[in-house]
Length: 231
Image (cartoon, rainbow, N blue to C red; front, side):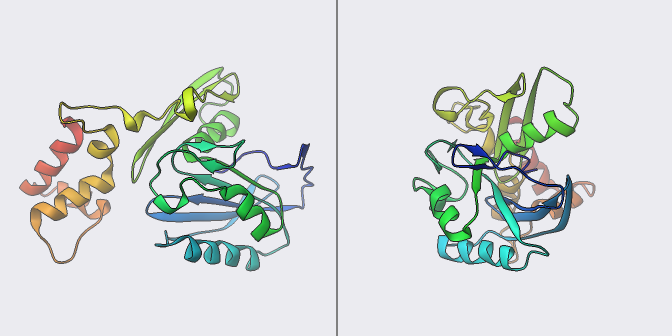
């Protein structure tokens, strides 16, 4: 997913086929990672997103330490409005402690290799335009459905960022008279949260379980799903 260019200062990092990169996707629920070498991903894994920045940083540094080969650079996708020039999330995101500080510079110092950051949906959209379903097209639109709803617009091989980096942020669209956004209504994670509130279960279930129960005609699930699809 994190198929973005790595830059060292003003110079493009020249990678050899044998060079290794660490690719990380930080989401509101999980952190996914893999090691990238010669257009192949190895060592893919995930862990729950830590509750604090200190815990997350320690977990990320451990990934570099456990890499099968020396890492030449780190590419990170983040939720929210990512300013790639300032090197930080300038608005809100699904991981509040990531907002507003110079995360790129902090990670570059911690990893001691070149680091790039980009919005998660933008990373996915660029990957699709490069090697995926949108390869060969002049324009494409991508939507990510997870903890929230994200999106991205690619035009002629470039991300259309829009005003204040919010181009393609479909999840912030207001969908109801109560100001519910698309992310609040349609996220499967938030749908599972609604289901758990309605059932009052002492053991909350995730979206996978909720979808599995849908085939059994669970009436509470129908209510949660209706809210998800119609508002």
